Amino acid sequence: MIKSVASEAVMRRICISLKSSQFSTASQVQPNAKPPSFRTSENDPQKHTTAHIGQFYQIPTKERKIFLYGGLPKSYEIQTKTFNETCIMIRKPSIDIINCLKSLDYSKPAVRFVLFGKKGNGKSLSLAHVLHYGYKSGCLLVHVPWVGNWMRRCKETSNSEAKEGHIDLNLDAAAWLVHFKSQNEHLLNNPELKISKDHVWSKRENTPKGAPLTELIDFGINRIKYASSCVVSLAEEIKQLTTGGHCKTLVAIDGFNAFFYPNTRVFTEKKQIVHPHKVTLTEAFLNLTKFDWNNSAILLTQLLKKIRRLIYLDIFWDEMDLNI
Image (cartoon, rainbow, N blue to C red; front, side):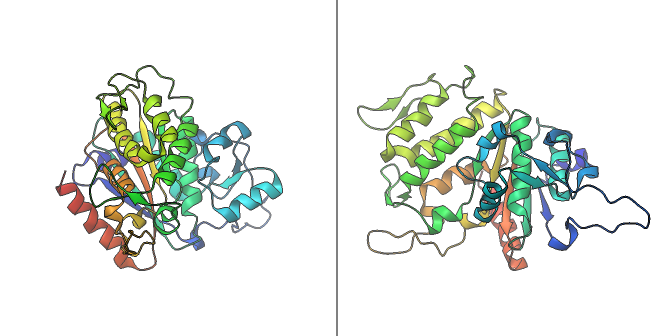
């Protein structure tokens, strides 16, 4: 059933709901039965099955670096420091997605998964579980810890030099490039990951064709002025490298609905509210969530307060897909 769903051209997204009542760690214990352990000794997410649902597993210290620059809720971060370990509960939605990722035909267009539910249902930690699986399985990770930080708590804004009328969030873009480089440090040394075309930034600065992908990333980190444009260019290069078979990519975006929610706290010089579509970073990550590439999978989370927001997301995606 999983293979047939993944291969259908029409069905390119799978929505999974999280409800707190279904994934409690407490379970009914049969009379005279030994209660199951709340912790599993299997710390490799590639080996997790439905038998592990409801149990906690520990992320090894060396692999904890994928969340060094974000990806875990702040309240949970406090607990990890208190207990000096990082443990995540294995939930059914994350197991379902991992099983799908194992069975997908990656020669077909990218399949998109949506985790939706109310605040506190476990969307971010389920995404973290799948993200850890992607890291262990050798995927190139394109992870946005929380889109709302850009749209409601951006560090700095400036007019885009690449696109008139757009706004750059260069400090946030540079911070994300550091996050991306940290998560994929073990893969970026691959000599096959090269830039496919020249990227000209100014009369004196450019990133030539054939240069390592790390050169594009480092340029955006060191030249903050062009960080947002570098993220857009990096997204295009990742799609080409992934489609060409040089790597397998897992895109994971937490709080995806912030990319189209109109009430932002990004303002122009005239104190006018900027719609997310006018933010340069939005272009990069909406481009990565299209299904016009293969050898990849896309996982998004959606904060669901009212069902109409999920319907709006579905209509928005259909319009975006038709414009490919």
